[in-house]
Length: 311
Image (cartoon, rainbow, N blue to C red; front, side, top):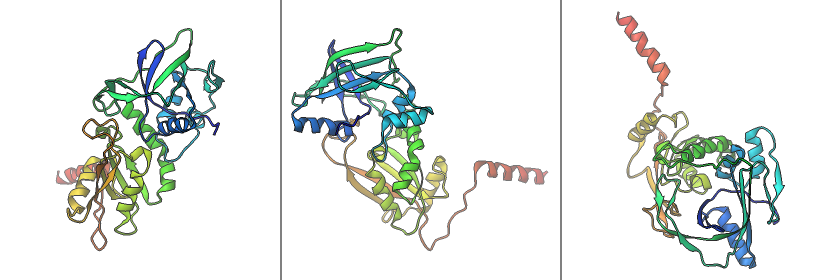
């Protein structure tokens, strides 16, 4: 189409002029490579390292629909960011980047096995095939800084960025799913494998419709466990989530599964084979009394008043 495409991918060094670029199978970057394969043309690519952090946040964001990543980065920063033309490819690259690696991928070439590599699931992925970027030019600043995401088990930088951008873009998701009140991707799910969802319930089938709609979106596609609760339940409070599960779930009525694509970074799931995603409808059902939820501050104040009266 001639429009610039910006995204995020994991790359590993193969040699002084080759990088293996790991695209997720369902990512739009993988779809772009397929488009070049059908056209029989090499795909030009520029990898930018460093620069303003807003660019990384925008590139890593799982948007519910296509957006201009440069505009999103400018919105996060509060003012536009400058681009310049690449040295060897007809692409725009970030003007303030610390490193810019330019080259092309031959989509007809056989992918090479590479790995292991660090994954968004805080683990190491085994060897896997990846297309090769042939490096044509490397540009760097006079005193460059190499950005690094530290591999940690739960609260990794990857998880923090994913959860932050999910929260920033939640209003866009609400535009697509009117019944969605709030959604939290808990830290112990690495912001990827679990979701606590509150909904504005109109009938007893809303939970299933919202779960299926979220499973169709890039940011929640790989959530293998989803809990849906009433809109007055705080999805950031795990105690309220589990209390709703224990109070409202009937195992034969409120637990449902749906086949979906396997997470490409999950070692326990067979590549290319559909996996089962599990959801719990922990909302109050029609004809039953709704519980009253108290905040932690109001409960503390209530307990304090009781102690005062007891004296």
